[in-house]
Image 1 (cartoon, helix red, strand yellow):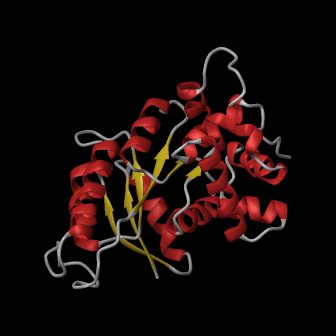
Image 2 (spheres, rainbow, N blue to C red; image 1 turned 90 degrees about the vertical axis):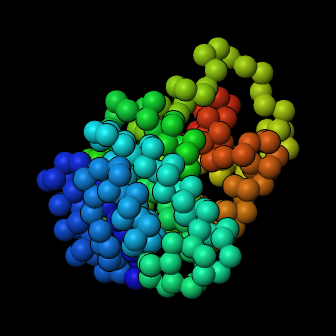
Image 3 (cartoon, helix red, strand yellow; image 1 turned 60 degrees about the vertical axis):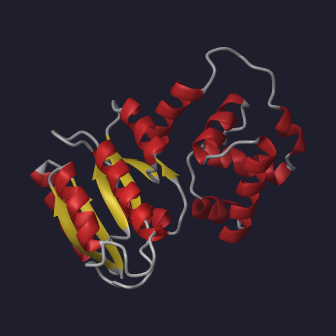
Length: 238
């Protein structure tokens, strides 16, 4: 059972998310928080697999809460057996770091970048269709990063050069398939989406993505997205 913590200061949005997730097979809502401080406390108590995190909240916002949650989870994971927080499910087992899926709005690009810096695994807009949200939760839980196509625009605006640049020297080392995969990464598709589109296994796509990043010398999927846009490789999706 995939355990999810829902964090949003707006009651209607929070309750709607909890109702949606509670009705989905294979998902258990282990808590809901109306603010960042409460989210930090509940994350330590419930040890969720995925946290749906609002960004703009009074007091401790979603960015600060994400940073604290992941830092504390990392400290627990590095502690000797039996020395961590201990009260949550599976006490005595190695604590796992939760994946944070940020719920954002179109005008919050600066917050998106900061959340990326502190370790968030993905970004979705609050008008995301229910089926897309459920798929996104599974995607980040599997260890992939996920970006809403519209949220990607902020990443591009922040990182992409305002003037034309020389082609990245690593592009020449990419195979045609790797260039194709990089273009789909730039379009905001997850590894699973790319696998379905190219009729490949998810493991094969993951290997292609890792090879692209290695050849291009980038350390994050966000940087790969920007490079794909700068290089004109972004696939046009139907």
